Length: 205
Length: 364
Ligand SMILES: [Zn+2]
Image (cartoon, rainbow over all chains, first blue to last red; front, side, top):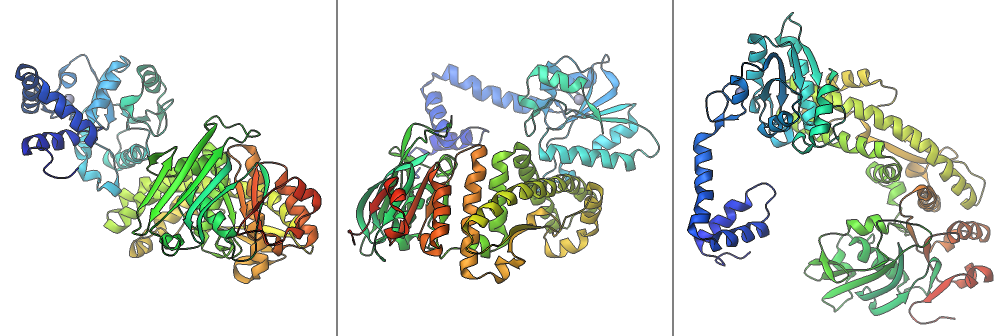
């Protein structure tokens, strides 16, 4: 679209909305005009909600899940099984796995998956913290729940490889959450039944 | 799908020409220079937005004109059920002399022609374009991949996973990162590369039987065509493959390129021990190309859309007996469009069953 078609403030809103995942320039325009038509008391709560969430929400110190405190609700819950740790790519994956009600252990959120093409190496993921957790916490089984994509698979292989050198003599069962998941998909989009089955049918790595 | 009506505006020597095609055999007849090959080129432009005859596609625009337009009406192939194919479609390609390209389907602009490449695949024989036989290995890998991917989901997935892991490893090679980061990608490469070599070996063995049958029918003298698979990853177990990749990491890093693996495969056409790429005569290379295209079409009976054959000036390549053999292969199904300067290359019976289209005025 040619510059100067919209006033600077309107253009700025369109540009910001267009940065959202799954929102193209056309949708951004539509959303902008929708928001501008709303009375202030209906539009402003959205802006306030974004501000409040951004100010309040941060990453859990221990597992990098989203939380409003230092530790997330799962890390704080004494009933969670401390011997089980599930590694996932994103906080949304924690949500998906929680919805299955099949998992009672803890999580560790990597913040992505290895992809040299996108400049994402191990240092860009929460891998160091994962290995230090494994050496300090009484984990007996590590469930690798990265996505069944190429990057997720490479990340899983990298973790299991590194684990051997990190743990010294200590034995941890390493399993991969994979059975039944569509290849190339995201955990986030798998339905609860499929994910639940994938959890129960996890295999040794 | 099949090609129905074709309209070409400002394509080479044609200012505005409309031709009608039918299922099975179509013969485009005209003297030399009448623009028969340009019709083949126009169909390719309309359906794939490219020309096999030139790098600069604007060269195709008629002299003195500022644009060209190629339209093809596609109709369903009633013998070949394809759930994804609409009953008919108007596909068009427009190009202006400044290089602006536009693709249309039923009058609406389209981002690209991928859909029609799937629904109406073309197999094009041009006597002056034997690059599939003579050119770089990449062309033959693409041919092989299209052939096998159509038949096997496993092959498609292996190609896609292999390509993805290769790109990641190559990115690491350029970054000069530590060895530990290479390992997972090499593990995936070894697994998928090993699988690809196995699937290509098996697939080529089967395809070679079809191809050598076709070649036997078309070759003027008894000759044996073999398809020789060349790979630098033969006879490696997954474990050995992985170790070989790790062993070459340092030398690969120097050139930022993965040397081992089926992304460097080739398949050569060898006739009676002569590698056509290295030492084939032009006639042998043309026959090799024709063989691949016809064998591919026969192979496609197994599933998916059957390629439409566009054969330019193919009859002059063959003696009378081989012409009968070729026509026997193409008339039974699908659609073929063959250009010729001489209708005597066809028998009365063949002409009776064909749709003859005159181009550039009748030359008797
Ligand atoms: Zn936590």
